[in-house]
Image 1 (cartoon, rainbow, N blue to C red):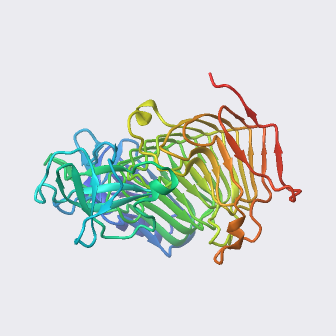
Image 2 (cartoon, rainbow, N blue to C red; image 1 turned 90 degrees about the vertical axis):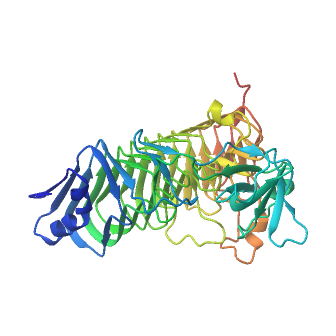
Image 3 (cartoon, rainbow, N blue to C red; image 1 turned 120 degrees about the vertical axis):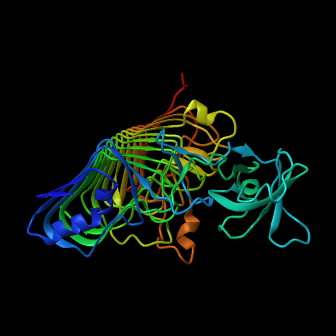
Length: 480
């Protein structure tokens, strides 16, 4: 309901009219639409609010709603792994995954059955009818592959390889000499759960506003697909997402590209399945500050909790606990051009894995880093972070500068209790410069590593022929 430039959402009917109400405000002479979501549960449809090609550089759009809970609308009761399930009475997501387990063998092809594989798993027999809708998430190097399960018989689980993930099912044997981990996903037993059937709540593309802000509401569950919040090519003096809660989100949560002056602050991200924040190229002055990230990346794949390629980013003072691959990832892969000059600082973050997460079989994938730096950076400053208690099967570093990283400065970090990996790893990788698709010809240059304190091994390579590199005063101490 519209009161002047204030849009008050009191019930589902008001919420269903949100697109119309915002468009009416944008079409008027007003310069502000103040959307107030009163406490309650609201169900959003696909792209519930979409702004495409809006040219109002004088207009402020503000959405606030502490106590408002936004849930993806249901599109039917039929089960699908892509759907998120939530308990509306407790306002909590409900996970359809079992606990992580170590397989008893590597996957083996079933003779005379094309595309069918079997893996040793200590589980009672289940027929094809009993396993209908069941999937297995199987670790494959730095990815979690998802395959449909056909049956379990005599301690062997049979699954069908119906797509290629670009990594071999035997990757753990090659890189870590460790057996793969797996997670079984079943249709929920409970019939009272709400099945989320859509993905995107807000999409903004190719628009100009004075400012956009979202403050206070909680987002509970959606379907795998488009990001919950996508902001691409928005020209605005300020874009803010502050004090929001996100849980049970099956897609990426917040994605942005070619958008300046973005601030994500004071938010809670908990039990989400893929990346929480993805910042693509082209944005400047991006700030991700003072958020809490608890147990994200539930699909056990290489979706960083925070992935940032912006220019002049600041990822600071966040608490990140429990993840499958990396907590923070910056830099561009050596096969991609750095079109805008990705640069910034990752500082004063605490990154760790909880005792409960480290107990039993770890969900963490191999060959990872709590802070992961890809090859190409105009300048990446990794300083004064506290990284501790990182555990995985193999190659799980504290800070990992991969594939001949250039122009990274790693200083003042405290890295303790990193099991099965280097505390800090910046490895020599000249071959990257010789690859046909590589966008870089001189790897491992412009790196400075100094004044870090660790209690474990470090692998630090600095080119002697590069006057712009530095290696100094990195200490290994005995952990208490």
